[in-house]
Image (cartoon, rainbow, N blue to C red; front, side, top):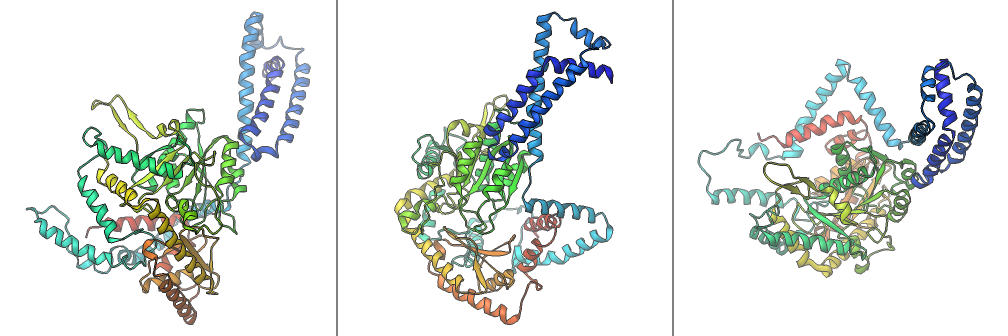
Amino acid sequence: NKKMIDVSSYIVESNQNYIFVGSIISIGLCPLQLKKLFHKHRKILVLLIFVIYFALKKFSSDQSQDHSQSLLLKILQQFPPAKSKALGDIIGIYIAVKCVQIICQIQQFLKVPCHSTIRSRIKKFSLNFATRFWFVKEKIANEMEKMEDDLILSIKGKNWGKMEKHTSLPSDGTSPDQILSSMKELAKTESRKWSDGKVSGAVYHGGRDHLKLLDEAYSLFGVSNPLHIDLWPSVVQFEAEIIAMVADLLGGGSKSICGSLTSGGTESIILAAKSHVEYFRKRGIAEPEIVACVSAHAAIEKACSLMGVRLKKVGMDRETFKISIKEVERSLSVNTVLIYASAPTFPHGIVDPIEELSEIALRHGCGLHVDCCLGGFFLPFLAGAGKSDGFTDKFDFSLSGVTSISCDTHKYGYSSKGTSVVLYRDKELRENQYFCYPDWTGGLYMTPTLAGSRPGGLVAACWASLMSTGRSGYTENVRKIRATVLKIIEGIERISELYVIGEPKAMIVCFGSRSLNIYSVADKMAQKGWNLNSLQNPACVHLCATVMTVGVENEFIDDLEGCVREIGCEGSGPGKSNGSVGIYGMAGSIPSGTLLEVMKKYADIAYRAE
């Protein structure tokens, strides 16, 4: 259209400098915001901008001879020189901003997701397409029915059918003696499952005297609620001191470290993600993104799902099983607000390269969260226990790039279940996790965490645990646990059919097999009373050693060797599947969409009362 060309050439001619400057600014922003990620494309883009600039200049000079035919152009030319220049400035600034946006969009287009993300997307698309056919739906439904009995047995146990069930309120209250008698019998039965130390994680201390202390501390403040500061100031003080003690442990000497007490690691991770998202939204990032490894705890997935934030998953190094630094750098963008790292990871017990990630976060200008839910009360005591085994990596706030840390006090802090601490580098970041609502008719409403009312008894029990154990107690427990882990690693390495994954430096030992079905090994170990964690991608099994594991490491190795021999004699290979083999083997081979239905069924059965 000739008239559009006339107007365009007039705008271009009036704003050549803006176009040029805007383009150069957008390129100049790359090293400030995108760092190494965009470095390879800078020279090409600069050259491209110069070519476009001179092409536009030539185009505008060729078209500037016949402006009179454009009505819009005549209107623009009627403005006084000052106003015309102001209008030209506005249009020029708009074009410069658009140049920046276009450059950023090109950079986003060049992103390459990790291979596991691509595979997951392909599987999901394939499943959604296949389930359009009635015979596929029917097949899935039939398989789900077959699986339901196994799930009920797995979740509810063998004696569930014999248990007395209550699905409505009794007409008259039951006597306390009868209630406690019934509950004690159930507790006694279930304690046999973990009291022998054959459980991976779950119970991190288990000592009778320690549990008695926690129970008594809870009972003293059982009715308290930290929401009511005026009624229970002592509970609020307990909470503040817990946060201060953990901040001192992981603060790297900084006095600005602050935090909150939460209900567990998941809430701590959600709040850390929320704080970073809100912090950077106030600074102009409307579509925030978080970068995490495929081995990161699923809580970061939940956080992004709740907030509608894009999560970019990156792969692991195939040798070390640490987060891939190259993929992290390739996944960063102008919208990245947080890099998520683990110390250690839950699946494999590997500590990510936090120092390298800290440098990347500083260069990029984004946050770095370290998931220390497992390692927060373990890694700081390795050196003092004499069991560091060459592990000298920094992972806490002594690294300038670390902006938040989650640390579970109910794991190796040995507190009752339901407490964790999320730490921040400063109060400015922490305040973004608060929920403040001043317009409620019920008054001013503010909660520091996701929950409103919280059990003060758990706060008291947590404080009692930290105070009673002390640094010497934590150091001694870490020494014992780490010695147990080293013996187990040595035992696994003697079994030719198995191999240890990565170089575990903490409490988790993860192992797999290239010749046996590792899930068959887990099933055999379960028959001998061991409760291990079966994992996937790759297929493997792990043991999370605790205070309860100390002293049973030789039995574990003997049982493991026996199970491997039995499977070798039976000739069990990848083709056989039963028990957890069927569930976890299926998890690694079928589309995630079908697994979602299995997981939902699992939750439904757990909620079934009869």
